[in-house]
Image (cartoon, rainbow, N blue to C red; front, side, top):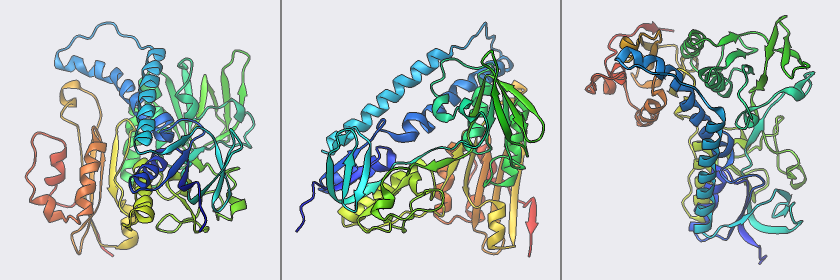
Length: 458
């Protein structure tokens, strides 16, 4: 019988890889893990965690304004970008330490190095040249920001990676992209007082989400002063003598900015990882092809998280890593259901969503009851802010099963988590109807919408 150095070797110290390593170790496996940057991965180090801290910071500008409607007199105020960066860095370091300690507590061997795959059972640490064998290898290296490498002047742009470490806040910024990262950062910079433009090649932002929510978020962003440009994209970017940037667009626009940020998607981080040599199959964008149980084309090599391009969300990567470890080392085989995932976009206003969009639901059945309610949140009756909240429920007209619930407004992400539970349990419209409202809340609207605003019949 072949003796390996480890039962499992994990390449990638993000949320999915760390969860898999820890769970496998608790099942008695000998586990090693390698990470070339910092433990915690994209989400913790330069993704959703620092981003949400920035979102909190950016909302204070409106909070100060709204306070006056409630009788508060807010005096002189100012914002210090360097203090925010320092506080963010301190928190990220604390979280990284937790990730390391959790690995150490379960006796996982930590290797601070980039690791590449040599064959079905061998990895090599680039920092030392050491080769390590393992019965199983798990790839959990995530994804990295895309840029258009063919664009003249692309060397002058930043991505979300660099946005977390800017030495100073620009006076003007243009964010290219229409997905959740682009939309969230546009809201952040705008809230921090930066003259912000969002440019997107599509006809509406947030492709893949429900159309009504996409339109609502964009309209509210524009009310807040963000210049949203649709159906256009950059043709070149030039750096001026004073260090500022000018971006020319295919639509004939000239956009001046202190920084231009690209958030046009993310690509699986599989380049130069040795996967081709080992025989691991990938798709045309470099995502690793896997089965439902995360196994690649090489039986001893598995992959979880964004590197597989299934559902690119941190909680999904964690679940996939846990399922892998339980199945292979714990004798408890299970797979992750990717069909119903609650999620939030920390745009301003916030968006929470679970289940099918109206467009997706129509592909399954032409008979839908649509419930929609748009209203001013109670807070803004006194603040005077012109901001609307939207709630939308999509119901199968025949079975009355709730297929999707979508919310735009304060704490929408918090609502989405609980709504995810109800839809996972197969809730019907009658279940919502017989639930007593919590008053006064915005969420009560979800159980008081009695009559469909639209009935679609095939």
